[in-house]
Image: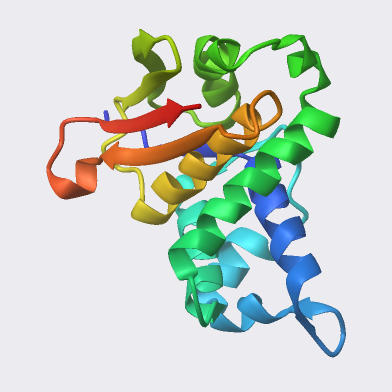
Length: 188
């Protein structure tokens, strides 16, 4: 039996909150929602989304695709910024326990725990470490959507910027480019 990937409601709510703040149409409806099909809206977003509940990964994919379709310029960068926003939100509210993370290396060390709280599949592993950086590999999640890769890039960078203003993360290997894993290289 194949287990389909799932995502925690806190991820969906974070994306919804971020994009809702950006632009709305009369009635307070986020503009990007106009890009969702009525089937997707009914299936994933017609009921309240609970932080701790698991939802089909497809809900996150259609949400990211709708937001991406709405963005006129710098689309990839805007999805990375969405990840940075999520990291800052988690550091200040949802995951206050992670305030015990005291260095960029600790970001890498805690990434497996953070990832397992948000996604039902895959695991983030610190593959390499050197004086001013490390590589995190996302293993076991071949279904990850390209836009989610960008969001994860921003999320890792958002965490790291709390300790080093020069912290930068790139997504240098990807399952969508034929690599066996996604790799996120962080340097400072």
